[in-house]
Length: 157
Image (cartoon, rainbow, N blue to C red):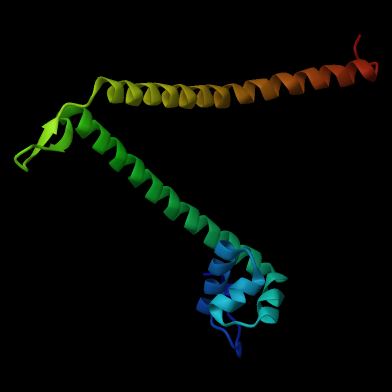
């Protein structure tokens, strides 16, 4: 909690302010936050002009991004597990007598999955390689710029 937002005699608690900041992150509108929280528009507008508001909004945003990242990671893990199960054991299908049995995944479906996975792996590898090359490229540019500035100023002998 941001200690700067706790004031004596304030009509709204630190939790009210935190809720307003969370709503602001989600809704991006002072008027919508006021409607959602019951706090007057003018009060929220005044809060947006304070230092603690920006700090609180940034803190809430980071927490929400962390929660979203965890949820997406779990979704990816579960999806991969389901795909792997289907590839290894087959799709579930109903037999003519009403039982559920595993039917091998079609070659077309397996090929589609394989193509997507290979494409995504290549994209990830290329992104990682570009990220690793970036500092070297930045250093090379800085050295070039330094060389140009020395040449222009007549320091190059």
